[in-house]
Amino acid sequence: MIKGIYSSFTALEAAWRYQDVLANNIANANTAGFKREVASQQSFADVLLSQQMPVPAPLPARIQAVIGQIGTGTFIAEFATDFQEGTLQPTGSELSLATSAGFFQIESEDGTRFYTRDGSFGRDAAGDLVTTQGYYVLDPDGARINLPATGVVVSPDGVISTEDGTVYGTVATYDFQPAQLQRAGEAYFTSATPGQLVSGGVRQGLVERSNTSIVEEMTTLLAVQRTFQANQTVLALLDRTLDQAAGQLGRVGG
Image (cartoon, rainbow, N blue to C red):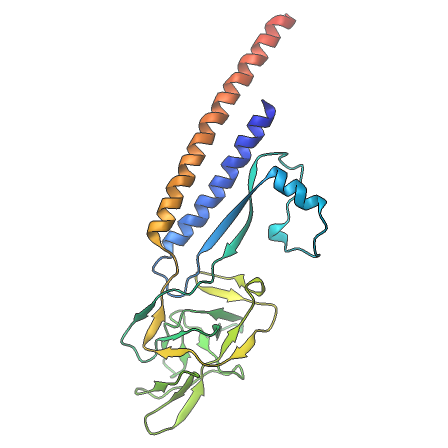
């Protein structure tokens, strides 16, 4: 019976955490460049087996599990980002950019570097190319890109110029292995490992939409909610049964 309580409890915990992930995916379905998160679940037996087998070290902390905390049941093994490309949407803006080659590099006012697929760019008051949050879009040398007031053309290599051929800068894009990126906001990532500078694949007048499918996420969310409710019912039943057993033992002992 105790094992059943542990199993239901860990299933509840897994479902609760999964609901949070799905809710965040749904909330960002209209966030340009957003990459949805997916969760994988493991049984206690799978975790036990993985702990007994030699594995490369060190493992990321988010996928390590300590046996004995709960003891049995199900838990979320890890959350992973789905980096599948979202659909491209025309914007009519000459400063909207999409890329099929890596991530744009941007910088906040305090100098923090981020990487994003959200190319919803514009000009600030000084003429610098910035994100909707006011972060600076950088060139391959890590410098800001200052633009004329209007009329720029962006090549597939990210070169920004005017029709007369004057070049104002190049939008840098970097490629990473998925494990090198850490989520740092709705559509932003950071990396402790330098990415590989890549070129090509930049498209002007388009932005990449979120890769979240509301229909898919809602379907999964409903299934997870049913699992949560079912385990709540089982846990309540086991709790009542345990109370009854304790009461009977008390009467026998009396």
